[in-house]
Image 1 (cartoon, rainbow, N blue to C red):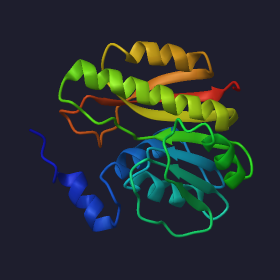
Image 2 (image 1 turned 120 degrees about the vertical axis):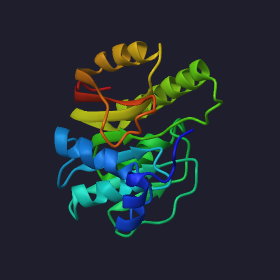
Image 3 (image 1 turned 90 degrees about the vertical axis):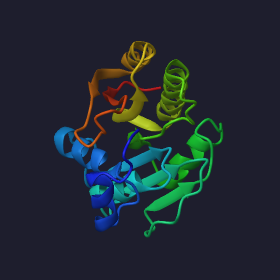
Length: 197
């Protein structure tokens, strides 16, 4: 049984982040320089908005963040942020994101998780499918040389997803941030140097 109100949960409440997941992105960004000032970023599966909050701080006023989720999300301030209440597989979405950004994105990031069943192999398969859906969006919105990072549940499908990423990116790594719960099966796939759609 996982303890929802752990130290990172309490810290998020105190510091005004919408979710404890914000610290995973902060850690990844500091260690891996995933996103920087002036970057244009797509946050796929963004609700409740913890990652979007962090991203807006990282990209600054010259950057932009396009957030996507089928779940509702409260507004965030700034002309450089837009929330698209949509499924990541919506075929009209890539062109709308690029229209808002004004060009292709520097990074596509995702902390999205599927609705879980409690059956590990089913949840792992759903997680892999979701990452592949976000990858499809990334292939249509990411600039050459761009970065992709997405959460995935550990399982047999991870190797298949890594192979799929290697078809489009120069470097792919698996990362487990310290802010991830010890009992969690989550890890992150970081892919760099996008070679184009």
